[in-house]
Amino acid sequence: MERLGTAQRIRAAGGRAWRPGRERGAVAIMTVGALIVIIGFFGLAIDLARVFNRRAELQSVADVAALAAARELNGTRSGVTNAVGAAAARFGGMAMTSVTVNYGRTVNWSEAAIEFGPTPNGPWQTASSAQSNPAGLLYARVDTRGLDPSYGEVETFFIRFLSSDLSSFGLHARATAGRSAIRVLPLGVCAMRPEERRNRSGELEEYGFRRGISYDLMQLNPNASTSGQTFLIDPLAAAGGTGGAPISPTVVEPYVCTGTMALPRVTSGQLSVSSPFPLARFAPQLNSRFVNDASVCDPETAPPDANVKAYTFNTSIPWMSTARDGQSAALLAETSRRWTVAGPDPTPTGTTAGSFGPLWSYAKAVQYASTEPASGYTAYGVANWNTLYSPALPRATGYPSNPPYLASSGANFEAPTGTNRGVRHRRVLNLPLLACPVGGSRATVLGIGKFFMTVRADDTHLYAEFAGLVPEQTLNLQMRLYP
Image 1 (cartoon, rainbow, N blue to C red):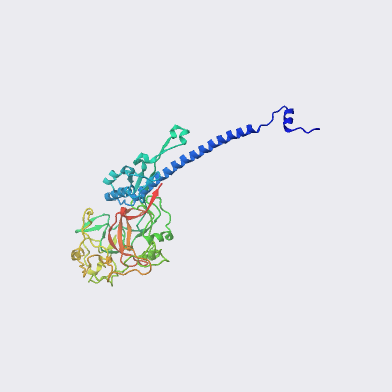
Image 2: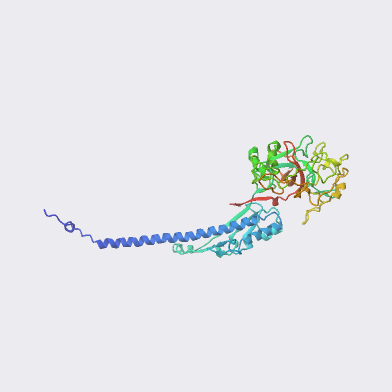
């Protein structure tokens, strides 16, 4: 049988022959439709990319301004002023430092964009309100809605065809910044008196401590005479938390090295504590302020002081002509209080010239004032020792114009050994002064005292000279952004 062609077979079956041109037309239509869809997706991606990019730019603007402002906050009016100025300084100016959006458009600052608060969650105050009430304001919040709204406007090219409401986007960003660590040692001692400031015959006394006098911090107790009382503070448990968990000395060691705690503040609530402070365990970390010892503390984060001269009571006190009886003011254990001869007013009868130990190695006694003057308290001179320490009457000889610790050469100075450079004031310990007695594992901080280590600590003694109270707001250490 003769073989039939393809077209003939199709006709024989009642069908129609295939026309190549018609299939090519269908493919063209499908290709055009696919291209429209693809172009639409590309357009959508471009618009979304512009939106996300602008959002990221605004977030960067807010982050930079908030961090710059937070670094300046110290609880004072000038701190708020400096914070606003620091934020403003990141806007305008040189291209290398100014913040921009939309591929180089310089952002101009407005004070309406910044607020200040005592916690990362507020409550928030405007800059002008914060100027009038700056105490405790340690956090800055920047919201770009306070800037020119055009910085956040993004006109769309393709998304608008989906809906007229999507023809443009009005974007903004917000950032909150503040400190997450504080330069306070996790060692708590009791306040020896309840008064923050007391007029002691013309001399300022702060929570029972007198500037320029050394104390053995392990031996003080305002509520008992048999032994001193100290507290180990959990450097990771935020004030106001539940507390009660055991505090691991291994965890605390690095914080003793650096003299810091991973807390934004210590006076806003009760701290988690245990008693006593294990000095024998932490003496090497405390003494890192005198010596480079990488096996104890990292010298990069916990270097020695720039002046490691030990002002030992029976040697190396060239500015005192009177022999001292001990490294600190002599212990005075009364019926219900354990303090020193420097505590009672007036000084106890029978106190001798040597009973006060080394005086004024770091700080001088100052005159009482109900509030600290803007220029600082007025310091006494050594000519006033006769009245300040009567009836003991210790004598000074050749006391330098500045406290001996500040010397950079001579008998009162000793440079640290090792390759790591020393850092001034590393021997200063900022210690929480607690309201005692302390019940359970929670303690309230009345203030922060500045104490200068006169000599290295040992397993049972930590001698330090009181140098005054430190405003908590000035102890900023580490800044971070909060969600």
